[in-house]
Length: 470
Image (tube, rainbow, N blue to C red):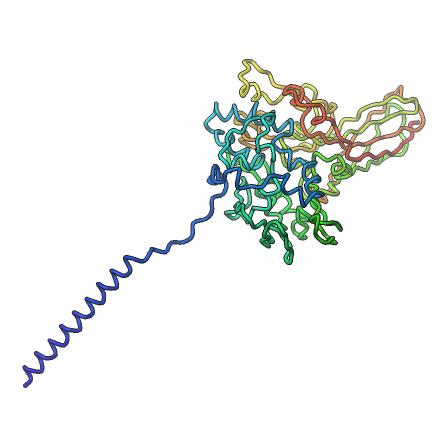
């Protein structure tokens, strides 16, 4: 009997094993027909998005203007819509950046990359390089209405180098819930209210790994960013207006002004200056000591910001005696490393790499400070090429010089020691301090044939004080 039971148990075990093996094989066969689930791949962004979306996927600005006329007019007056057609941008890309990209492998990516922010429709369509603005292609739309309202977010931890994600289509991205349109769907997306939305183009790292644009990062680390005052609060302020022609008036419709360095109204008062004498009376042949305080009173980022390599902000202090004679007062040096690049000098030369880019043998460079008067304090951060020379080619920047710019809501004091001439007219002397802004170094503008308006100094602030010469 025990032997029979053993044979029965073995038979049962055999049958059970056979059934399990059969079920296992069947399960494996079934699984073989099921697609393997993988983690979702991130959408194309940055360089990977080049050539991914044809022009036809985006509405033209004219189509958007049919319903959003006021916003369209504001947009077309701003550099946001002109960032490909604007004269200096055109000259810089076609006469410097693109030829340099062809000649130097290290910077070859800028031929396409510049367009990721300056002509994003052309970049996404793979139209690289675009034709010049005179050809009238859709590259001329710059940062178009539909481009911004098709951005859903960005890839990575930091917004920079056009790492935006674009999803053009029937649904337009907007920050406000509860809105309807007879023409398109509206996808509510709070990302459009965030400063990160601006950072995708207003932060840039060049081929050498240098942050050559960091406006968003400056904002993030400054008092405005920490207080939650976003880029849009200054550059797209809210006002009562119609968002669409057939819509209702909104009390806080975001104005599409995008006013910045190319808007003189925005520049005026962005920096403030006050000056005072430390002695109210001084004898001819004696010394008068003055202190000028300069404040970045309005900008939520450094001044200057953006294309820092080509922008110049300077402090000029002039003494005028009772007879009308004038003397420009040189700033007192502070002695920090690299300070010589922040004090204007008529004899200083720079930008020699323009000769390299343009194939000019023996090119000695251009006047580093353009028309900034000798001895004036310049608030700048020099960009240095691989040979350590100052450059305006941000894509060819291997290092940065001292950051002597104006930080948000911070003041800097500059002292001036004036040796009063013995022939200075006795009586009241007026001391005038002025802060000037130039979008492009005048020597570079003249050399590259850029219209004067680009380098024309804009007066940001002025203040006068008085002392008496005995």
